[in-house]
Length: 157
Image 1 (cartoon, rainbow, N blue to C red):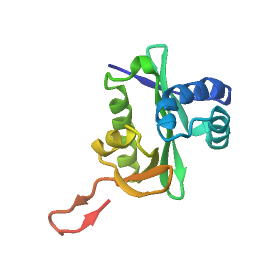
Image 2 (cartoon, helix red, strand yellow):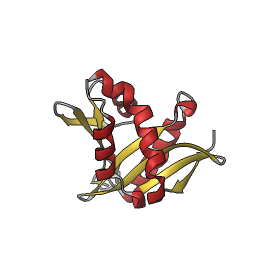
Image 3 (cartoon, rainbow, N blue to C red):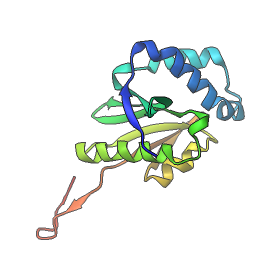
Image 4 (cartoon, rainbow, N blue to C red):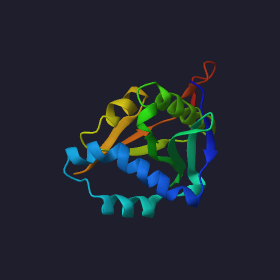
């Protein structure tokens, strides 16, 4: 499966909010937190179109992802795959591309997932490690690969 990114624009807000509600509803209901108004407000407060990409297969909208700066690291958020494209490996392909970008930039990727969400296993499978949790979220980070200079024995990022 081949995908490509297209930059998001502020005009994409409604479409991406709809996708967020669709893809997160089950996980939010599982922890008793599904509230469309709260979801709208959280998305409105965190949507950064300049760091958000639409995921396209051909000309078909298949999802979105945001990856942008956060205190010297990168924050991965709003990673939603439309139900019609789930289960076919698209999420893994997109995440692999983002990990490659982070490796090249020598950046840590940070993210959070809802408690009891299936997303936790997905990120753990891709090398993310739990860094903490609170009542509603689990926090993860993925460090860039370390490279050892075998001649000097020194580790460098």
